[in-house]
Image (cartoon, rainbow, N blue to C red):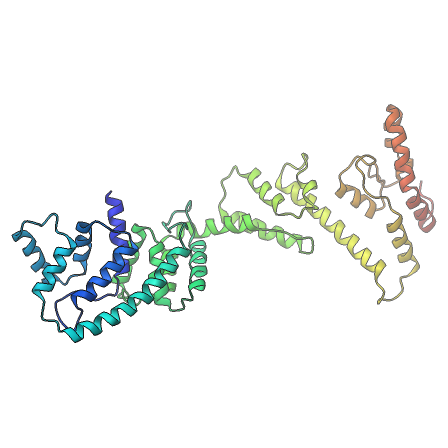
Length: 401
């Protein structure tokens, strides 16, 4: 209950911030204009209890007026249950020296100001409704995320004034953070003209324990790699964000999951393989896959290029071999796609990865085929698929044993 009351008082203080206090002088503010300001604030924070209204309204009275009102309450034995209407009647009777014309002009000016300010505040409150208040805890929201929410709201309601931004932003602070910020403003004599950037700097400095690690974790979760990017540079950025995020010592599996999730769809089947159990192995697998794809892409560009010079005979043979090379199929080749592409690029045996023979002369394939009749016929299909490649290579480079 006490926390709700304090929060309500803080919201009320925020809404009436900058408004003139009632001091009973005609040059300052009339009773009716003062009442209009208060009623607008009560409507925004949804206060209906007349005793609570009177208690909150007392904070907008000058000291000598407040003393006079408290003496009146004690004399009439209503100190604990004085109502807002009783306060207004007391002020009207006690300070009835305000003239009619000035009162009318003042009410007109106050009404115009109230309509513009209240409408803007209401639109802002609607836009940030449901968003988390900044309380300085890492589990809630970071300064950067809180700033993004506010800037989006400011853009929608077209608020450019930095002081007005700070005033509106204060409504999205938890009570203890708001109190700390108001104390800072009073200490530095910026209570009436504090700017939004000053508020952000204050929050960043005061709650700096969450800014670095939490922002690093946010960037790590949003990290994404594309095949056209530079993978070594991406790995450096990933390692930097992991270090910045200050993940716990036993979070190796979490790091591996972050890394694999950041990779493109084509690469994920290789990385989420059961054999990839460490981050180092995932990086190595991704690097092989990426470099192989880069090589194949460059070869395809050379083969399809029309504006460049005519390829030499050796290039033509290599291009022809690339077109006639078999495609990866796990039924025929007992390896991952990344390993298959690397073997093909290095002109190795597509079955076992050896360097001194091709797939149709692979002893390992033959031994595997002799042990299983079904696999025997399947392996012959694999031989037929890469026999054209071997024939072309033998013609271009000489017979290999």
